[in-house]
Image (tube, rainbow, N blue to C red; front, side):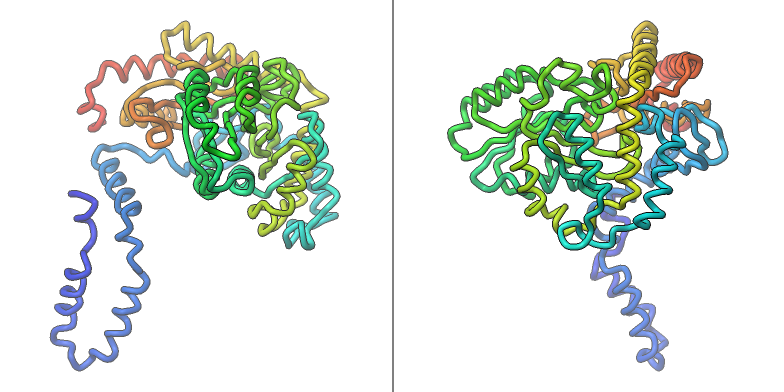
Length: 450
């Protein structure tokens, strides 16, 4: 059955209504509004191509006996461990890199913020929503990057989209790494600027591209992640800065996964690379990873932040970040700066996982071995099967499949937490090795039928 077979077309639907109405002509006046109401409630959403594609995929998964990996119900606070639908698991599917989620000092800061400010600021900050804790957060983040100022958005995705859409227009160009996050692509689409992507971390290709095209545009923005969320590797930051200078461009680094993970004290890719953070024009990040909160931010020079605070649509026209989110992130930054051993523990656990995986012949791609360890499988079905089998054995790692990653590059993604123990890592790698070996011994047909 194809997706188009799963719902009636308009002509068939009309015919069905006519047949349903036969023999009820006396009640036509009563039944017709009800049928029309049913038709309106459907409103064509079930005919939407994306919905039909979803239904087709679900039907195939059901036929193949594949359990859905999406929206698994966690019964407790997820950290190094969790409980999924009543079953304890070692958890590698959360961004809590420093193990701060639920930290008592952060819980106290959140409780105090609720008492003082309530659960919402109830308006956009530009009109009536500013709170002292917002500026505390922005100054703490600016200090991390040695920046003049910072702007905190209620959403990490909106921070990227709004910033790009505000800074660029139809006469401009954005050039981004092919593995950049969706928020970069969507921001470029909204800006209406020209868009180009260069092969992952191929800075030679970036230079060739800019040599050919830079002169055609007024402004150019180069974008890379500091620690790539799907592959666990990063760019040559020194060279990116040199390319920015050579071509009179701006450089944005999305270090959402680098903060708290890279560098001796967790300040991110610039600390890891030994680079002055002020050489990067725009620092983009989120509060939902190491800072165990919710929201996004942009740090940079005073003019950049002033511009965004008055023109970025995701800031000006959105409610301000709840004070409790800002308070949680402020306290998390304080703990990260005061306890660098958390960063050291995370890095040691990550190296242990990556080293044991490589020693077992497991493909972790080009991962640097900091926080993010992808297990490269390739095909979608074996990847989903592998995730399900590991879950049954008490290890939770999320499968990443196309279009989230390129075709033939599906993988399991393991997020290592500073709170993971050596025993948990050793056990998980061994179970992974066993299940990969078992997977390799089975044909696709046997996988589809359990």
